[in-house]
Length: 124
Image (spheres, rainbow, N blue to C red):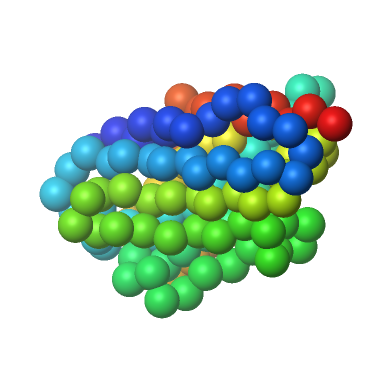
C-alpha cells in the first residue's frame, strides 16, 4: 500500500509560480510511475503530467507543456510539480497519483493510488 500526501498549493497571481510536492510512504516508491492530475469545479479530473520510475521519461498535457515541470527524488520518496507562468485556467485541485510499473501513464484508471489533493487558485 502506498499513501500519497500533496502540499504546496495556494493562491497566486497570474504569471506567478508554485511548486507542488507529493510525499509517498512505502519502500518501493522508486518502482512507481507517478502523475499529477487536476480537477476544476464542475469538470472532470484531467491529466496534467506524468513521470516514469527513473525520472527519465516525462509527458505533459498540451496546455501546460513548457510551463510545468514534473520531477522526482526517489531518495526522498517525493514527486514535484513546478508550475510557472500560471494562468487563471490552471485553478483546480491538484492530485498526485501513483502505480507500480516503469513507464508513464496518462489515464486516471491506470493509477492505483491517489492523494487527497491540494488547492491551487490563480487570480487574474
